[in-house]
Image (cartoon, rainbow, N blue to C red):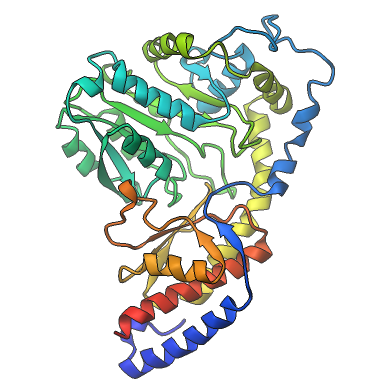
Amino acid sequence: MSKSYLSMTKEELLNEYNSVKAEYETLKAQGLSIDMSRGKPGSDQLDISDGMLDVLSDGNFKCENGLDVRNYGLLDGIPECKKLFADLLEVKPENIIVGGNSSLSLMFDYVAQCMYMGAGFTPWSQQGNVKFLCPCPGYDRHFAICEYLGIEMINVPMTENGPDMAVIEEAVKDEAVKGMFCVPKYSNPQGITFSAETVKRIANLDTAAKDFRIIWDNAYCVHDLTDTTDELLNIFDVLPEKNKNMVVEVASTSKISYPGAGVSCIATSVENIKEILKRLTVQAISYDKVNMLRHVKFFKDANGIKNHMKLHAKILKPKFDAVIDTLEADLSGLEIAEWVNPNGGYFISLDVTGGSASRVGVLCKEAGVTLTNVGATYPYGKDPTDSNIRIAPTFPTPEVLSKAVKVLTTSVKLACLENLCK
């Protein structure tokens, strides 16, 4: 184990700085150009779904109720696709609306609906200042929705069991707090799965706002990397009658089949489904039912999706290992960084000390490695401690990834040494 930077003498720190600086310049001279700014599948992952493109070659475009999916109709989705998602999320088909390729669009549209049409009560926008709870570090697109719609965001610290429930339970005493975004399984970016106790406490929240809504973004519900999978308690199983309309779950096949041509869904109470469909009858004629049928014929059922995800895991696990192995080899014992080794999801979260994350981002970019914008994992793009870095290891090959992470670890050491040597 390497000697802690915090226990080094001034002379030792200067010697280490000169050594790391030389290593950084050598890496910089390689002329790398590696983009790790977003979590997207590599081509090898996309390839395993290509059989989907041929499943309708027999010319049978009718779903199980006899409707030709090439035509109008079935605004809430074809029956067999509703069942596919219902089985995957362990809810009833009547609690499902199948959407287009983007669960992000479903989230945006629903929050906008609450803002301007209400969630069973007066529209949020007519009630004064609207606030949302945002567990962080978290998903930048959630924060972008709030910022775009003029919703004030409140940081909620994440713990190893999920968001800090004491903070949430206190915050919801404010009637202006209308909702919360969260990723309950393999959270973005930390890979944390909410504990059963956390899920139960969320389900039983006593909120001042009677129109409080939780956007339960279950993006990584089947995205396991190992056989040691995290188990997420189904929040609908523990949701009391008084909160039956509180939870709006979304999911999609974006990182199961094709990100640009997947299928999304929303799962919620029958009452919420009715309100959403009122909007959709004005907003859309129908979503892409051909794509829905294509997905059902390819995956067949929820077990088919789970088996397909094992193919993804075989591709992704070596990439995650390449990152973790390099972090451990280069940074263990230095006391300048901490990271999470997740059992699933799409990211690895790295926290660096001394308010140096922004500097790490700059050093990486100068050496040809583009990371997610530092600060993006916090509302308004402002990380209060300038510490969190989201690593997206899915797109590069393991070989390219090893080079990129070497640049990252060297940049972390250099940035921290710059601070310590002042």
